[in-house]
Amino acid sequence: MLVIGIESSAHTFGVGIVDNGRMLANEKMMYDVGSRGMIPAKVAETHVKNASTVIKMALDKAGVTMKEIEGVGYTKGPGIGACLQIGQLSAKTIANALGVGIVPVNHAVAHVEITKHESGLKDPIALYVSGGNSQILKMADSPFKHYQILGETFDVGIGNMLDAFAREIRLKPAWGSTVAKLAEKGSYVPMPYTVKGMDFAFTGLLTYASSLAGKKSNEDLCYSIQETSFSMLCEATERALLLTNSDELEVCGGVAQSTRLQEMLRCVCKEHGFQFGAARNEYNADNGGMIAYVAERMLKDDRGEPLGRCDIQQRYRIDKAIVV
Amino acid sequence: MRQLSEGAEAKVFETEIFGVKSVVKSRQPKAYRIKEIDEELRRTRTKKEAKAMLRAKEAGVEVPGLLALGKFSIYMERLSGKLLKDTKSKVSYAKIGVMLAKMHAANVVHGDFTPANIIIDGEKAYVIDFGLAEIGESVENKALDMLLMKRSVSQKQYKELASTYAKTYSDSKPVFARLADIERRGRYQIRSLA
Image 1 (cartoon, one colour):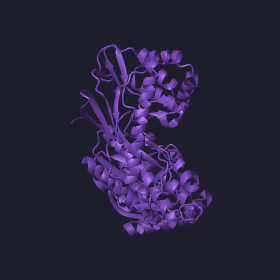
Image 2: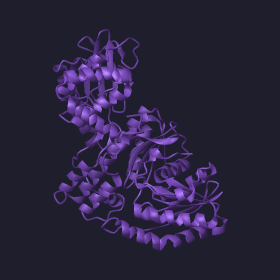
Image 3: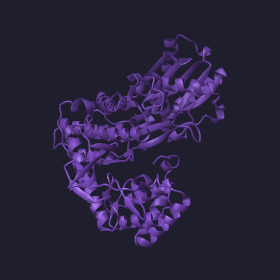
Image 4: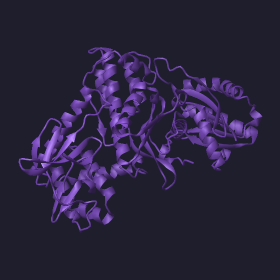
């Protein structure tokens, strides 16, 4: 089944095309967050400008024409309302014009599922870390097949926390990557550490690190905030692995691109003899391919929705989404 | 030393100290985190755990006797008896409500108050594993103690426990109010494994 998937939950407008689980195209264009982060109306405006270009790029890459498309998927949420609407509208327009099935997809499910597919893990604990999300997940079968949230952030997502700190010291916020670069030359300054069981909180750390801006070197602060926050994630994840008797771990989402975080999680797994997996970075970042991948499976499972019910939901939690 | 159990943070071994059959809970180094964070967490948590145990004991709650304290390890009296989650004998949840009330009145929050952390030995009930305990007045944390136990036992058992808790702890009203509040929060609705 030839399916097109559209992702637009945040700064990325992505379009993927799959055919029986095989990725034919995964194209994207991004809003430049600059030094001010995302302004919803501006991001949506950029998506409007880019939408048809990215769709054409994907079709060309896949070597198919629009008429051949047999199904459509789009990100229902979680995400920024104004941005989600652009993907939703594009998807509905395509589905309506072609008269093919359409299905709304949970963004977090797509990240977890594409990583599972890429890594070949069977039933992993998933650490989903991105700008707005930080959750520890495990597949559960009742009352329906879904990802259960074992632990999560009490306040902000880790990516947003690192970006907020980056702005504080006038770095370009880019999902932790600018902080990571400075961290390479830093040494440790004690920072507050908040883990409660399998949950964690980041704002105390952010406030404290920000209060030291200008008093300690940026390198030291970046190193310390990164080591502390990643250690928190690792501790909660290790606890989740042991409590659920799991022996597989995947990491997914934008912050999964961090080599330091992957190195630490690999170390957690090595100690217990667990399997560790991650996807290639093109799937860790937001992308349309993962939406297409999940959409195809859902359409084959007859999970398509009538156009009138194809809505968006800004706070669409992963544990409310049926997984097939 | 024979290893008895292994948690995410610590290993528990059977040992003998001063001729007394005992257990030692030892916080293990974690290779994933830098030494500065690793040692600081293990040291402060070990100290905090011992402190919480002593406070609970002073408040009249049965806990394993503290025998010795190392930098990253706690030596404790070895208890006989069975974990509440494994025991088949009839247990008074009224008594467990009183224990929790006494701890909270002394501002000891257990942090992982479940049937897996209570040992029943005949008439006596002991609270074990203060590894996640906090000392403080936080109503939220006290309510979380209650919530965790509520989720792990039957409705009838919870009612028994809550009723003696309310009678014993004079400041229990805000705790129950916060508990209701937490349960209303969306994120707690589907989660079954707290």
